[in-house]
Amino acid sequence: MAIVYTDEIHYQNIAKSIREKNGSTTKYSPSEMSAAIDAITVGTGGNELDTSDATATENDIALNKTAYVDGEKITGTLSEVGSDSTLIVPLYSESSITDNFVVKGEIDSDRIFRENGKVEMHVPFSDFGTASKEDVAVGKTFTSKDGFVETGTHVCDGGLDTSDATATDSDIFIGETAYVKGVRIEGKMPNNGSVHETIDAGDKYTIPKGYHSGEGTVTAASLETQTDGNAVNADIRNNKTAWVNGQKVTGTMPNANVVVSDIAVSNTGDVTARVYNQTAGYVDTFDIPLSTKLDTKTGSDLTASGATVTVPAGYYASQATKSVATATQATPSISIDSAGKITASATQTAGYVSAGTKSVTEQLITQGAQTIIPGTSDKTISSGTYLTGTQTIKGDEYLVPENIKSGVFIFGVPGSHEGGGSIKTYSAWLSANDGIINISPGFKPLYVYAQTLDTIECSTIEPSSFKVVSFFAMYTNTNIAGICRIRNDGSCDSANTMSANIVWGETTVSIDIPKDMASSRYSVYVIG
Image 1 (tube, rainbow, N blue to C red):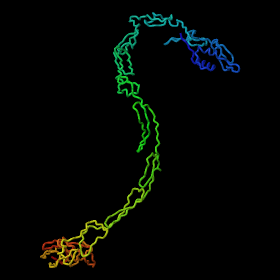
Image 2: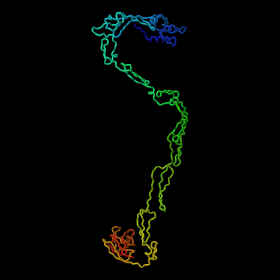
Image 3: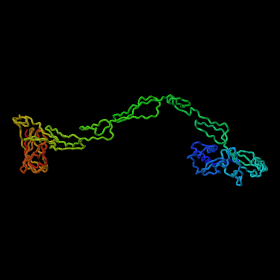
Image 4: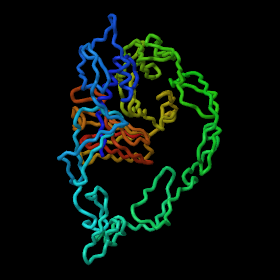
């Protein structure tokens, strides 16, 4: 027997129409719809309901139910199948039995199916075949021609009757076989033996498919191993609980109070929001609306005084600049005072001076190293001359009173010699290869004076021709200074000088004349 239901959308549409007519929001079951429709009134006296758009006929309305269509009241003729009635539908020829048993019937007229309405399909038993239980293998079931479920009793010749076996391959161990209903089956059931598993809280263990010995266990891990920690009551919010090392701990941490102070700006520009009087405990998330007004500054607040630019303390929203006066770098001057002090000075005007170098030079008169031999006239070094070498003023140990004629002063030394000394004169001709004059006066020589008698051609002095009038030396002098007095052109030039080496003995004297001056006759005077 089959049950046939009408489409749910039809009931929904009917309920919607009722609510549109009566203006309610009521939800209707199919059994309530008829009374709701009957309760709908048609307006009169100018409030008539317009039913001109209605299209239903008597065959569209439930049996003995009325409705207005196009201004007329009509009574329905459509029969109903409700919870207290059954519709019997005869089988028709298109019914078939293949993999499934398909039964088809035909409803002969329109019906309204109410909730819990029933439909019965009537099929003749003859349509189920002609076999009897003797025709069906033992243990197999079938629907007989009489319409009853029967179990076959037929046993095949010469075989074991396995028709009552019910095992499948999943009921037999892997590697094992069995016959069920005449068929050899290979087992597919795993043998798991005894399985043991330990799981944590919240985990799950999937039991593997197959055979279990019944001795396996699934054990929950201890709370101590699952709740390791080091929190104590004071670490957990007040009245909140937590499991720590297997023990349930109730928190004692109080809620903390937060006191907001202010914003501070340091001399280095650091901005610090200070929160103080913070009590120990738990603090919920919170916002601290703090603000402060900074002392803002601009470039106009900067002041310049000389080389100093003063930048007042405060907040500068952008770069601040201050222009300072500029000046040209001064050029120094050099001065030398009478004490030989050299001074370089410059007068610099105030202002910013760009990097750079300015210098000035002054050329001094220089004098290299020289030996000054006193003579009959003064020898001077010009004022302002810079000496680059040692200036030697020749002295003589024989410049003593007893060697100076009485009444005569030589370089401030008064003479006391009253005469009685010895003088000898010698004449010598010296060749270019022999320029040594050896003299033995027979007394201790104190002074030597030599004079050339001819013009000497000297290639080492310009002009090369000149006449030397004298050489003069005192005892212990190692050389005789030769001074060019007269040139053959008649001029006098005392700047050209040369010297001859001299060796003093107790009663001898030896003069080594330079070779350029040797080719001449000499008169030599020795005073002792």
